[in-house]
Figure (cartoon, helix red, strand yellow):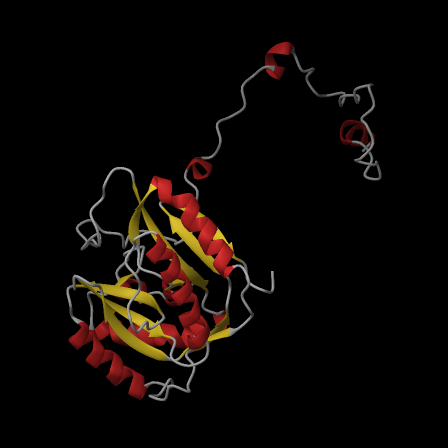
Amino acid sequence: MEALRATYGDDSSDSDTEASTTPPALPTKSKPQTEETLSSPLPPPPLSLLHPPNPLGSLDYLQTGQPSRIRSFPHVEGNYALHVYIPVYIPSASKKEMGQFLKRVATLVPDLHIVDIDVPLNTLCKEEHKLEQVALGREFHISLGRTVPIRVHQIDTIVTMLRQKLQFQKRYWIDFNKWEVFFNDDQTRSFLSLEVVTVGLAEITKQIEVVNEVYKLHNLPEFYKDPRPHISLAWELGDLSGTLKRVVDEETKSSSFGGSLHNRIFTCKFGGIECKIGNKTYKICKSPDQ
């Protein structure tokens, strides 16, 4: 026992005080540490540290040959994609019921993929925790303007103007009331989305008008004339909005969400506005709570 205390020190010692200049005595049976043993290299780190776990879990479902999305505009050297949006997170209390709805839709429309990460929805449906974590646990976006290419010299003025015009925003709630189907301008993709049709619609529409002003000053195309704010959860190649719409409408009527727009699917607070240009994200305005 005395030997152990001599080696490791007393438990009551203060770890904040400087260590004594006298080295602790070695146990009588220990081999003295030679210069060779002290200079020996450390063992290699475990392989698991070199390959950190993927936050989405096993990626076996990321198969090659999956349908890829088509760019809405061609890549040009020196151009940067501009996207202005409200970040949205789905509350945990709503994920289970939404996950059940996605499962039913995926059985009838098997080619749906999760937006942005392009994982097949019906594969995620096999494990409920992955469905909620991957399909519903990430950041979603309510677009306030079209995603368009801009030149590098436009970046500073666009960000500055957006901040000046949108810096003062009141706190408000956003209700997502309706499952809806949208498709992109060139009709290459259909989207399963959640639309804002009541609470929060007026505030978001005003913010879209402000973004339109900034776009016009930079000769950029304005947003749709009658905007329908929404977040998109899944996509499918081609304009299959008719087929997907029928499935969504049927499942909505038979689900607990019902067909009434007063039945909220989920609600969240306005969380500020962000602007992504290329790979860089700019904070345009923070949530009034921050």
